Image (cartoon, rainbow, N blue to C red; front, top):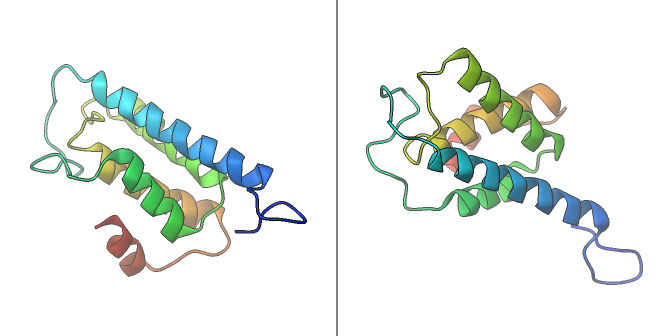
Length: 126
């Protein structure tokens, strides 16, 4: 991205974006630690925890999606609403990556004027 005028640095907006993305990662990581019982398996659950950390996965999403920073806030809102509407769906180390990618795609398609195909998002999500 661009930087501050007159030189190579990181713009204030980029730093803010990094903080929002880190905040989302921290919130999801915390939710994963709160799970006492896994609950019933859903389409969001994988057989084993992904080998890539949530922070690395989110960094990949940020790099590839190119969506607005508001999408990350919307992503957390969508996950929060899902948890309230469907308490049987728990955010855990088996479900957080898939919940994250689905929520981010939904946020990008809802909020941003420019978005990609489902095939592209599937490739980014793994």
